[in-house]
Structures are given as C-alpha cells and as structure tokens.
Image 1: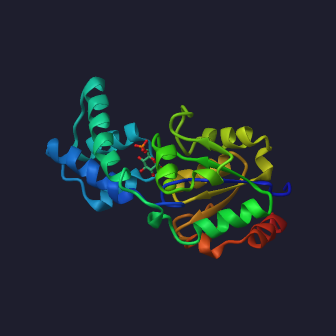
Image 2 (image 1 turned 90 degrees about the vertical axis):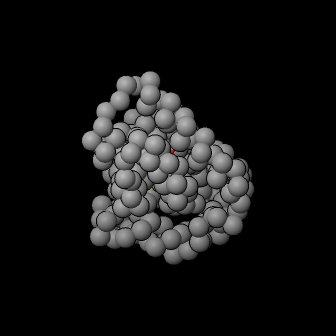
Length: 220
Ligand code: B16
Ligand code: MG
C-alpha cells in the first residue's frame, strides 16, 4: 500500500444528508403514479442515480413506462428536490466534516468529491464546502454508477494520483464496493454490519483524524 496522499468523499450521507429531501420529492412522484413509497423503500435509493431511483420506484409499484415519460418524471422530481436544496445552509453539514477537511488541507492531502448526484456542486456551494475541494467528479461526469469504480478512478486521475494513494469515504454499500473495485482503501460511514467490506467503519467524520488514516495505511 502506498502512502495516502488523497481523500475521495461521497457527498450524500457523508458530508451532508439530503435523503429526506430526495424522499419528499420521490414520494410526490410515486403518489402521482398511485405507488405507496415508504421511508424503508427510500433506503434502496441511497447512492443510486436519479434514473435508477425511478426504475426502483416503478419496480416497487409493478409498473413500466416509456423512456420519455421517465425522463419527464426525473425532471419533475429534480425541480421539487432543488426547492429544498436552495434553502440549504452550512448548518446541514454533518458532524466532524469541517474539522476533518481542515486537518487534511493543513497536512497537504488532496481532496476530491466522488458523488452520484448531478446536483453535487450546487450542494457544496450552498453549504460553503466547495473551497475545500481540489476536484469534483459527480453524476455529470460518469457513465457507470457505483459499484462501478469509474467515479473514484476519475477522482484519482483528476487529482493526479494513483489509486493506491487514495482513501474513499462512503455511506452506501454500492459506494464501498466501488471503492474496493477501484483498489482503494475505504472508510465506511454508518453501521459496521452493513458496510462490512470497508477497511474501517465510523459513525461520522468526527471519529477521524490524519493520524487514524496513517494507522489504517500501516495495517494494509
Ligand atoms: P441527483 P451520493 C446520491 O448522492 C444520493 O445518495 C442518491 O440518493 C441520489 O439518487 C443520487 O445522488 C443522484 O442525485 O438526483 O441529485 O443527481 O450519495 O452519491 O453523493
Ligand atoms: Mg452517499
């Protein structure tokens, strides 16, 4: 294992949590189709692209529809979702995030975003997190969703580092798989029994420090 010089962060569930806004907007879409979409169903959408999210909702309702209508519904959902994103402030940043990003910067580590969201840049702007990032790879730049490693490999490339110099921070099972498929170290943010493929699992970023990353590097 190389010396860690770069950190790749997932956005939703790691730096901020907009799952409740996604849920509100998707529930409206589902209701308009007569589909009962519960909070438990919403768990299946975490880390998944907008398009795939709609496919899952249709699967839940046992429905199919033409591509054009799917595109229109994705647009409509996104318009609703953006009404809530527009109201976001730095108060919605998850615990420990700002301190950890500041420490990484101070220690000279590079920082990139690796998110499925096409709204990632806007969310980073609303929460004042954008200045910490050296590169942003998001839903606008990738063709294959997680667990495909594309988003993290492109992140490493944008930072000019090799995959073995990267550690990924992820809250979704598909995201942890994407990191491992990229041959990178992965810190899971959430429950150890769910994110068991990660090299280390924390509740939130307040449990992390550069020293903890160094000890992870020594173990691998
Ligand atoms: P958008 P992440 C993901 O963000 C969310 O977890 C997921 O629920 C959402 O469907 C996806 O972004 C696409 O978002 O509709 O804004 O393009 O966890 O990869 O940062
Ligand atoms: Mg996530």
